[in-house]
Structure formats: structure tokens, C-alpha cells
Amino acid sequence: MSSFAATNDNGGILLVIGGGIAGLTCAIEAAEAGREVVLVEKSASLGGRVAAFHRYFPKLCPPPCGLEIDHRRAQNTPRLTILTLAELESLHGEPGAYEAVVRIHPRYVTPACTLCGACAPACPVEVPDSFNYGLSKTRAIHLPHWMASPAQYVVERASCPQGCGSCASACKYGAIDLSQQETRKTFQAAAVVLATGWAPYDARKIENLGFGRFPDVITNVMMERLAAPDGPTQGRILRPSDGKPPRSVAFVQCAGSRDRNHLPYCSGVCCTASLKQARYVRAQQPEAHISMFYIDLRTPGELQNFAARAVEETGIELVKGKIGRVEERAGGHELVLTAEDVLAGKKIERAYDLVVLAVGMTPQSGGLPQSAQLDEFGFACGSTPGVMAAGCVKRPTEVSAAVRDATGAALKAIGNRTK
Image (cartoon, rainbow, N blue to C red; front, side):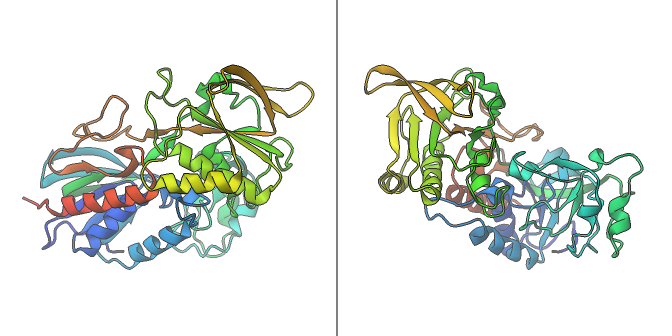
């Protein structure tokens, strides 16, 4: 990766905000086409939500299929500068002549880190592992995940006891610098691409579905981590309450989605994602009973074929009806779902060992510049000359569509030139 250059002969700097699959794709494509690119990512590593998936659909490839290649391309692209733990603080100017101020938070670990791992056992503090959506814990100094890029540990300094320097003392390479301070960099950019991605809807807000009260009610993103080999259970789908394999699993669609009290819109990918996850369950538990409660099955375009195969291969029971509530049966961990069976015309109650809520996608559009045009739900719905959006901050979408959209954004951005 190159050091920053203010201008070049190919039209000026392109600033990409967000280092998930969309932002990373856009930055690489533009840099390989000859533009000088600065990529700004707020977390400690690249890859975004995709890095935490077990499999993509429809091909069911693991994340390394795409991300590892992108990481290598990024490392071998001299026109690309990557800033992690960084945020856009301000953006002023006009197309072709923007001034961007980026705030960079300290990592407290330098590039001298060799990934020897001696620091983590020396750390006295455990913190929830955000990469595993709180299903496990990690140390205050940790590697974000096994495929993290950059491949460096990071310190959650706010969690450290005052005066503690155990990790630094354990590092024989001198790679830990707890005196690092926040810095700022100013860039002159011809164009800006907003690719800040998405976040799962907070299931705690859907009180009738029991998330946060019952440990065996989890979300779809948590299910991905349970199924992943690098996840909290080494890829075994187990109930959080007792660590046992579930004998029955219910997938609850539109958990908060298409609901005026939560998310009025459809995220478009949740049905396909749940059918994909049903395949995870069937592969591990051939005798398990699997149900999906849905309003409408929405698997558009080529995903319809994937969905049909998943239903046939898993033998999943499809129940058209919205869940009214989830309760835990007294004296045990069994969860009782009350639902309307629309096709049978009656109310039903069913008991399951594990309930997976298909929560929708919300745009991570907080902190975007004022020039970003947002719709009523917070998605970046349009673009102004020189500032455009790509990926899931623009609309809910699946991985391959986000990649295509990001490639298109790179092409548009290349057309902007420094004044």
C-alpha cells in the first residue's frame, strides 16, 4: 500500500468511506484502474459483516473465497492507502475539490506485531467478542479475527485497568505502544464513495420475541457465527443455554421487518439467508425438525432456484404466519411460539429448542456528510456530483449485488477529476 499522495496524473484522490466488501471492492477496482485511493474503515480490520459469515449464497462459498483475494489485491496495489480505526470527521468543498478530515484512533499495536500471541494470555481483562456478536469473550488485546487485515492485534484501551501494561510487558518485540494518541489527517479528494454498510436491527426492541430474555433466542447473524469453524463453538450449532445440539429449530422471518413499529421495509435477503442456515442445521442434525414462519417467501431472481433446492434438501416445514410471541416453558429451556397459521386458519403453539430471528438490515448512515441524500429509512438513496453511495448503505442487498454495485461506483468515481 502506498503512502498518501495529494494529487496524481489520473484525476485526483478518490476517498472511500467503509472497508466492507463494497468499499474494499470499490477501492481496489479504482486503484487498479490508476486512481490514487484512500480507504477509511472505522473498525480494526477490513471485510465488514461478510468476514463474519459462514457461507455466501447461492454458491455457499466461505468468506475466504472472496475476501482473501481482495486482501491480497489491496496489499499489492501501490495506489491504495488503507486507514483502519478511522472515521470521516468532516467533508467540505465541491465535486473535484473536496477537503476531508479523517480522525484516526490509536491501535496501541504497531506494525512490528508478529502475531506471536503472547500478549493476550497476559491480559487480565475479558470483553465481549463483538465479532461473535457477544456469543463469546476475548481479551482486551486481541486479533479481531483469524483473517484480519491488517494482521495486527488491537487494544480496547477503555477496558484496561488504570496503569495496566501487562500486554506490553509480555511482547518481546516491543510492538505494543500504550502511549499512542488520536491523530487527524486532511485529504484533498476529487470524489467520495460512501460504503459504510449495514447493521442488524436490534432484536431487543422486539420485546414479544424474547431476544435478550431467553438465551436460546438468537439472531440470524449469530447463527452464522455458530456455524462458522472459527466461531465460538468451532462450527457446531449448539444452544447457548446448555451447549447441546438443538433437536428442533424455528426460523422466524420478518423479525421486526415490514412492521411500522420497527422496520417498515423488507430487507430482501432474509428468507434466502434463513433457508441457507436451514442447510447448516440439516447437515449437522439430520433428524432435527426445522420450521420457518413467514409472511411471504421473497427470494427474487436467481435466488428462487436456490430457495427451491434448500426447501427440498432440508425438508423444512414452511408455515405461513407471523409469530405473536415467544415464551420459555417453565422448568426447561424449551421455547414455545404462538403464531397464526394463515393457510390453516387457526392459531397454533409450537415448542422448539432454538429460535432464530431473521432481523432486517439497517443502514450505517450515521455520521455521513451532509451532502449525502438519505431516504426516510436512512439509506443513501441518491448521489450528488462527486459523492455517491455503494452497497448496503444504499439499499439492502446480498454480497454479489453489493460487489457489482461497488464496481459501478468505482467507474463513476473515476470520471471525477480534480479541479
